[in-house]
Image 1: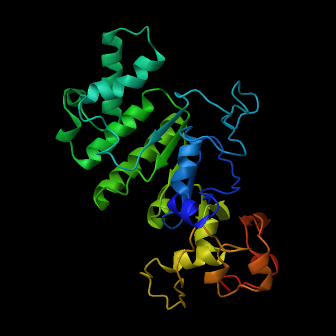
Image 2: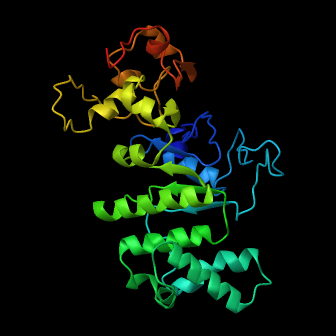
Image 3: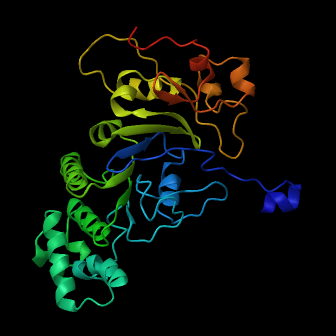
Length: 315
């Protein structure tokens, strides 16, 4: 503000998310990956209804054309719930766990009596691997993994169809991460839940996802199913990310680390946002924004892929 007043500069706008387009089919898990600050968490909050998009729309219909909610742009809260990254910050420290889990039930089912709500809370706590007696405790009496289980129980309390998971395992130990991921996969199969999963950990993405989208500076650069993305990545940025994974098989495959720094989102590059760091960039990449088009079953935004200037990584 001072710079604008003193130097007469115009007001600058950051496009945290810019023109992304994807869909998630019922019962599947789409993960969004990428470097910190690329807009993953903003997408999560948009999908959960915590933020309102300035342009465009978010439709919610469960993938069923005959659904009463097909095309719904503002779904009821019980249909969409969110699991946050930090289980220490997302739970009210002054409430007992039973009150935390019961809040969505009371909000959506005001006529239920205390006995019914208490019974339902006990069922949810048992479902996520805790004891109904744990409902008498406060959040500070649990470990990080147990708190995240409480967060999952609270998210399930309203009977949602769609869960938005914003890096739900990043604050946990590796062994606890595995337990939470196994729990989430079991719940997905049991209740046919649909997940939007946000993570920067590619091992986690590979384990839990059906489909993967890679973001860079607020835009999607590649979107395909998990097996295809990890076996045959097309976009140079996706290849750089996968090259950062340790090669435990000692295959001797040539690896190319990504160079340079992420540009400022206040003053992004022209054309392809990745061109200052891409060894395959040419004049077109510097001037023309690539569109997310399908190439060989993968949606990718890259002029080099479109023009056939990149070889297949398995060739």
